Image 1 (tube, one colour):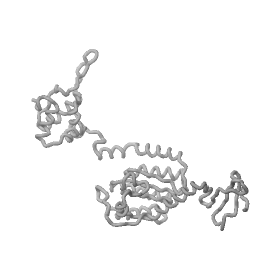
Image 2: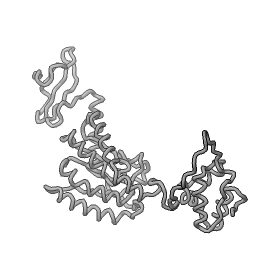
Image 3: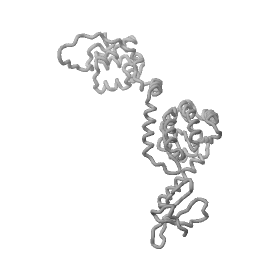
Image 4: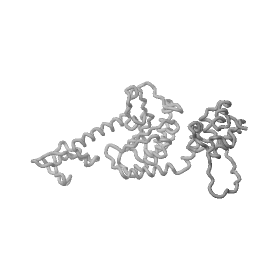
Length: 336
């Protein structure tokens, strides 16, 4: 018995009307494709295997199928001698036989039980070998941050390559559970590399890297919670991070991050980093060279006696009192 005027699309439409099921839901549950019915309306054809799955799904719910040869069935061309009939394989339940990326739980099971995150972290680590950090810090933007597994491994590689350079990391994430899991992985990273600023935000992708809201209303309603970690062990850091988690739960629902309408000042450390960045940009414009950041050794371009030289200043010197040739460097310093 078949319905829908003998067509697959008609049978599906009758089934959806009787059961109150959306066509996208039918496609997803029957053949793991929410756009299946829409494609049929656009003239798509189906294989015998797909037709069988659709008929089995409707029969399971007590409805007639579309028969064995509806107009939508794809015409198959058989080349060579007829092949002997093969016993059909046992059919899987169409409601459970779905692709892993159609279901978040299946997807999480996949990414947490395979080497995908390791491979990504290693690939990012290779890219770190191609960069040359400039003060004030190595900047990293991770969106979305997920459960922090990849970020933690990348931070480990960053410390190996740049053990004395500060890190400024922004992670964008909208899942409270992922934020919680990520923060719990950070205690060891902070202990290994104390000169780290980690910002977790749910701002837009275009705003998050620089933490600069596009609208004044968004800036004035931003909620900021700052936790400056203290202690001598990663356990000390972990306990303080756990306290921050409790604060976060009071502001965030399990589904989204609401933005309460009260003002909170921006992170002073991040603001300081931004100011330092502006200073370094100004240095670049004026060809001022920072030779050694820890020593505070700086060279200024100048003209002495019609000759281009560098004025040289080092931290703790009261004034600029030395100069050297362009090629001689610090060893060739002479008093003005």
